[in-house]
Image (cartoon, rainbow over the protein chains, first blue to last red):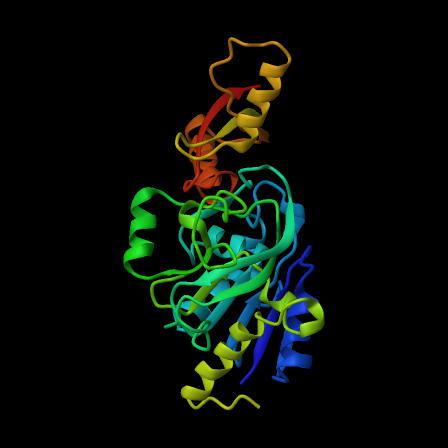
Length: 236
Length: 82
C-alpha cells in the first residue's frame, strides 16, 4: 500500500502531509509531481493545501488542468481514495470530482485560526475512527473557503449524507456565529456520493501531535488506515 | 485578428463579498444613491485567424472549460475584428 502527495507549483502544505504520513503514521509515501500522468501502484492520493499557480484566475482553476489531474480523476473513478485539503479541496471542486465551489470568505479576510468542526458522517473511509457528532479541533487557514452550491446541490448533499464536516462551536452547536467564512450549511468538508473523494478546508495534517495544539487531525489519518486494514490492504 | 472581451461575473444569488464591501466603502465616501455593487472581471484576448463563428465557438469553449466556473459565474463576450 502506498500514499501519494501531489506537488503542484505553489503547493505549500505538501511537506506537512508527507511528514504526517511518513513520520507520524509511518506509512509508505511518495511525492507525485504535477506532470506525472499515472498513479499506478498508489492507494490514496493527497492534494495538499497551498496557492497553486498563485491562485490566478480562480483558486484551483489552473491546477485542475495539470497532467496529474487526468490521472487523479481516473484514479477516483476506479475507487481510489483522494483527499483534498484546503487548496486541494478547491482543486477537487474545479475538477468536478466534488460538487460546488469555494469562494471568497464572507468577511473578506484571510482567516488563520484554530477551528472546531463536527463530524457529520462517520461512515466514510476518512472518518471511520471518529465518534458520531464528535467535535474536532483542526486549524483553518484560507481566504477562499466559503462553500457555495445551488440549493438543489445542498439538498442532495444533505440527503446523501455527503456533508462530512460542519463548522461548529466548542460544544458542537452549528450556528452562524460558529461559521468562520460564510459557507452554506456551515460546510467544512464534503465527499462524493461514493465516499472515496473527500475535500475539506481545515488542515488535519497540521494537528497530528500534541505539541501542535491538537492531535485531532490524526483521526482522519487513522481512519484511512483502518479503512485499508478492513479491506486487508497491508498498511506497512 | 480578433479582439475579444470576456466579462465574468458572479451569478445572482452567489454572495459577492467584494461587491458588498466596495458598496459599503462607496457609501462611506458619500455615494448614498448606490443600490448595488457587483465586482467581476474582464479578460481581453487577441485571437488570430479564423472566422467570427470559429472564434466565437473557441471563446465559448474557453469560458466553459477555464475562464469561468459555471457553478458560480456567468460570462458574456464581445468579439470585434481588428
